[in-house]
Image 1 (tube, one colour):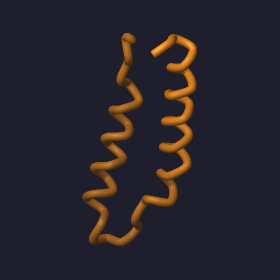
Image 2: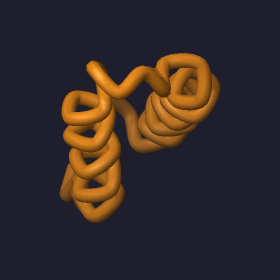
Image 3: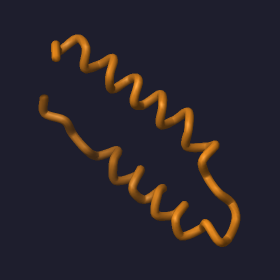
Length: 52
């Protein structure tokens, strides 16, 4: 993978995540634990650094 292509992949991934997160949040109390777990995972994923 060329260095120039990586930015495109990251941008596409970021776009897909930010586009889908609001529509995938469940407000039902029965889904609250899974929703909270997903949000915590997303918060931790922000700090992942790729050294490619």
